[in-house]
Image (cartoon, rainbow, N blue to C red; front, side, top):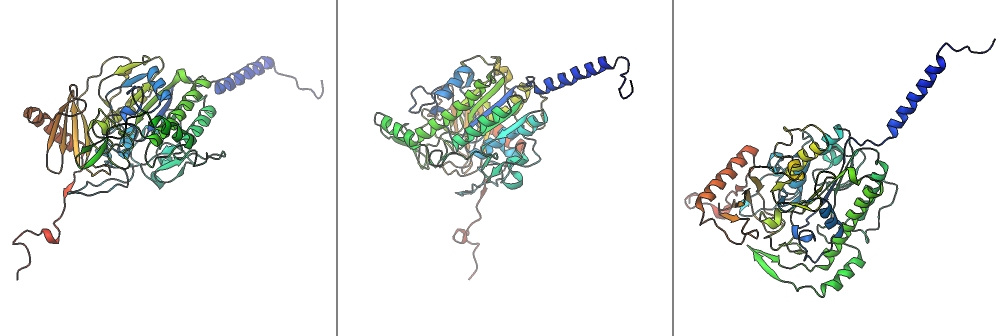
Length: 484
């Protein structure tokens, strides 16, 4: 027996048990984590409510993949952005707060004066905010980002707010590192395909982990750009479309028809990219445990900068607090929860995504953070959700012709207050979704009530207001000049 190890009694049983335990651990580590749903958030840029076929069967544009998503999930007909321009809405998604609380009430970098000096506008999302991405990461999610951030650069990039690390880019656009060259700019001027390519690779690499993929596309924001072959397709289609027609919105010209070939091409490229992401979920067997959200950050661009689309019958567009500027295409698909092809008319707003996604992920709420959002899970299940009024605050002059203003919607009633002169407009959206008939003179009590609610809300959220300009040398009042 010399030179041989004599095992202890029962050692074979112990070694065998240990081997099975190690194998079980390896299998558990390799098994997909199905305890949490994946989340894919698709955010379009400047896409109008009437641009997709699901909302507008007569649209000039072609959006079969977005329309299919609507047929599979719940489509909201009164889904709102928290602001008529991009950065504030993006901040509301990430924080669950109304934009005035973050002091981001205009697109970052915007500063245009008029009769008033616009309110100060923060140039980044504060690091003290616990973003939706950070909350999901803390709950076990691996996060993905590619596209338009527009909530701060450098130390305020998405790398510092729950995404990354390693994302590279500028103050607006960030992408993950990749060894695969991106598509040529001529074929992908809005990086639409690049975002989809990176997302598909991410899904493949993380199909066994719960993930949050946030895809804020650059399309369909100006400058308009799309593949030449798609532009040629819609130029042929344009020949049978209605000719250009124009109206007025205050001092701005507003487009009244959809017939813009290059814009349509840009939107088709976006729709196709979304279809590729959804197909990746199907291909890897993830669709049945993946929540998909789709919306736009503000309404379609109709009153300036090329006027590429029309939001009719909705009034106005990007940069305005009329419905065309804030009512968005909104779709949520939650397998096993949302009824395919269902429609909801309850007003909802982009602040609501944060608490909704936390609840769907089985994570505890963070009410001190998402204090202005409500979980939409009751609506997703086909029930009701009583809620109070929704509010907007845009104390700026938009590049699209809009002026400093605020708004409140309470049930069917909507009031808009113009800050330059205090003018108020009142609409009943149930009877007049196009906001054609100002009922302020006919319902003075309702105007007083909603004006008071709007003022109280501004005080609650610490909204900063535009201010009067200091008088210039030629504006000195009589009697206050230098004596002779």
